[in-house]
Structures are given as structure tokens and as C-alpha cells.
Length: 335
Image 1 (cartoon, helix red, strand yellow):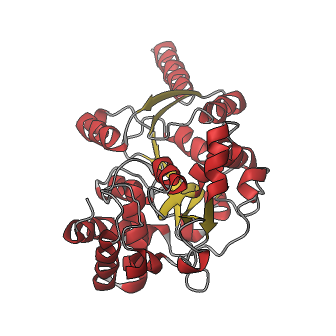
Image 2 (tube, rainbow, N blue to C red):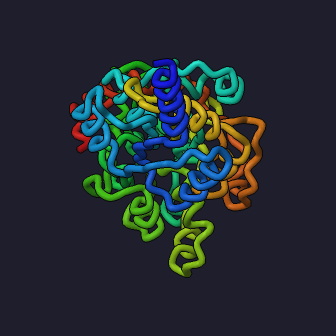
């Protein structure tokens, strides 16, 4: 009997050990450069990563449908509004990690998820039709002087939702709606496309001004294509609200799921994402700033954008205002 108990104990221990060597990652990040990030984690820890990539809503719906039997350990995505949605669905489990608390600034984390990289939302303008001094603040995009000159992606896109969520946090819902209506009144065309499309539309003169995440701009700055180089020569970049709260910041981030079958591996992975090595992958691979302030990116194109004042609004506050932001956009007619 004792031999049977000992054998069972050994099998349980072996099973537990085997479980720790696997991490099931549900990712809404779709960047080829992340391959090296994941491969290095496996090399360092021996933990194999099983990855499922899809759009955020698809992954969240999948996790909900899987319920308690979900194999997902960690969910990562590229926007505060999307992290908020997962949080509202009650999918994340609190992670207690002194390492993460020391490495990730307080305004870039919540009780249930952490940001691992940041990107800013900047104003871009056509040098031939708009002057930099005309677009120093996000508020300027609603000025009548820019009528017929603003291009934008959809108001339902999380990047725009997070921007408006920050305006709501700073100025209140009424003023945010006034701003959104003003911008809609200045549209050069109906919202369409992604940030790269807005940049190219401004460069082509289809519109005079737009807003873009910085990593799209750095991608084009690093491009060897002649048409990309020409596009970047035709546009200027403004860090908005530098005399106010600073430029709006968004994040890539993630957290451990409540039903994670490999919790120890999940925490190790999240801690790894806050390591110097992983932080450099974010900066150099996808042109994002490290969330860890002591890590300096060796990315000349990213550094060429210069230093700026960033909005220190807690990312969790953006997340809370995302649903209200969508209602404001809808009322303003920003489709």
C-alpha cells in the first residue's frame, strides 16, 4: 500500500512539474517581432508557449465560452480599452508580484493587469496645408479653421476610444462630446482605414491633419521604400498638449486569467515581460517605449521623435471611461 501511495505521489509530482513547463497564451498582438520574445522566454525557462492569436473580441468570447475549462493562462492585447473589457468580464486574476510592482509604474498597471510597453497618440499634419502652431493640442482638431481637413479612423476603434476616454477623465463628458462634434464637423471624408492610412492620406494631401499612434510613424521612418520616405518628408509631427497634461499614452499589456491551469508559469511569463531583455524587444522590435523607466531603447528612429511630456493619467482610468467614450462618439456621429 505504501508503495502505491509513493508511486501516486511521484506521478502527481511529475504531472505538476510537466504542467509548469507549458504556458497557454491567448494573444491579440500580431507582430512578427514577438516571435523572438516568446522564443527567448522558452529558452530561459524551459516553458513552452502554446499560442493562439486572434482579434480581441474573438479571444474574449472564446475564453468566456470555455468557462472554467479554459486552457488559457495569459491574455495580452494592445489597448487599455481592450484590457478593461477583459477586466469587466471578470476574466483576470490578481497577481501578487513584488518584481512587477517594482518594475511597472503604478499608473501603468491595475490590480489585475500590467502594461509592458507604451505608445503615444500624436498629431500629424501636411506641411503644405497646415502649420504646426495650428495643431498644438487635441482641442485644436475641433477648431472651425480646420473644417474639411481632418482624417480619422473609426470612432469605435479602441485607439480612438482610449483617446476620448482620457479627454473625459480630464475635462468631463460634456466637453468631450463638444470636442467630438467639432472634429466630426471638420472631417475631410468619412472615417476609414487604420493609422497608416491616415498618415498616407495626410501626406497625399487628401486631408491636412490626423492622429496616429507613434509606432506606425516609426515603422514608416524605418522603411526602405521610396514611397514611405516621401510620405514622411511631407508630414510634420506634433506632440499634443505639452503645456497641459501631456500627450495621450496607450499601452500593450496583459494579465493572468482566473481559470489559468498553469498559474506559476503565467506569473513567470508576466515577470519576464517586465525584464530588461523583453522590454528591449518591445522597443526595438515594434517601436514602442518600454514601460520600465530604467530601460533605454536602442531604436534611433523611435528616439528621433524626441522627448515629450506624457500624460500620467492612470491607464485604469482610461479603461473605466471606454464605454462612455463610445456613447459620446455615437452621439457625435463619429462612426
